[in-house]
Image 1 (tube, rainbow, N blue to C red):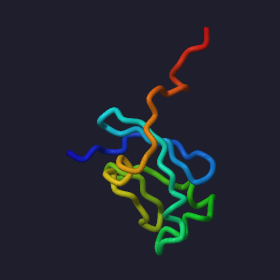
Image 2 (cartoon, one colour):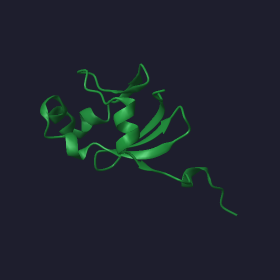
Image 3 (cartoon, rainbow, N blue to C red):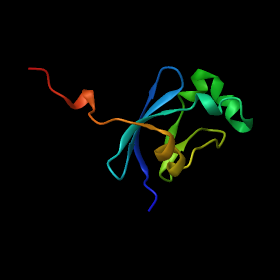
Length: 88
């Protein structure tokens, strides 16, 4: 079953921190796609930051999107989310 993107955070350098419905978390790097067709518009970082979740994946206003399967396969997995750890 394909997981949905349930949360994300735009990071510097065209990376996106992603949380999937199957509990996996990771960093998806969009850089390799920026020279490919419709994705070239994402090079405008102001536009890139306009991403939102729609139908279980990340989309942009002019209908660019990545399938959740692609995101899951290509993201660098995060084993421990530092933002959830407490400081003593």
